[in-house]
Image (cartoon, rainbow, N blue to C red):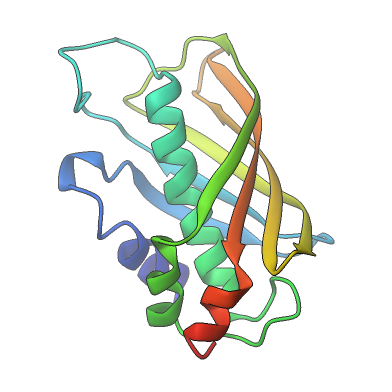
Length: 166
């Protein structure tokens, strides 16, 4: 399965107007994986028009790129000490994984939502109290000066992984 297949599958639960991630690639050359994505937000789904990329869209874009990255990594057995899992099994965990904390979300310059790119990098993975915690950093930028960045801590219950026979 290709990363394009993973992308298509993990954003399928989003309503069509909120499928912002258009392309993604995975970089596994460092100690931890990174994902880079291209995004388009043709119009806001929750208000008439903001004219710029904001915190609501940042979290939706973060989720879509994170699910794509971790979906691809999970199929390759690259996260924690877990064996590779099918994309179907990973998708069943999408609803039971969650963002624990958003930290340092900073918008340095407004981002044009019509065309921009993003990057997520896994900084560390830790097994604590039967949970897998994934510490990440992220950034979004347009082709001009628009830029936003932050950190996010994700969690998934290892019990949920075990219960899915992964």
